[in-house]
Image: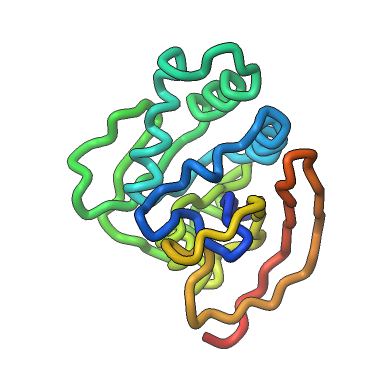
Length: 189
């Protein structure tokens, strides 16, 4: 059975976007970006909310912004090789290859996908990840804590959910980012 892994770059106070919806403060440097790429290598399918998908869809055409960054070009290659499932009630059709749209979150369908997948699954987007966490589907949380507090916005983890976590890994980066990986087990909600 594959694992479902929630990965997010967050502020130290636990937000993936600030109160204005900005996340420019979370842009990884080359070292962190290369590390994120290594985390993504085992993932064969990404489960994405619409907003996260729309941000990541730019990776379909990295020549517009990747420049000389080996990590960015590597990420673009990883993105193009992964299957993508976008959960959206409003997205008419995907703008990227290897992508399908699902209209509703279906925990049983994701359980079946986990059971049948040869490679791990990733979940991206705080709202979708919150649904997966509440359904007890997430096996691991990989969080990269940025050295900034933004004071409010979109929380990386949903309010009102208790998770019992076991530390699996940690790493500190030169730019001040700290990576923590936890195994999840859903407690009471």
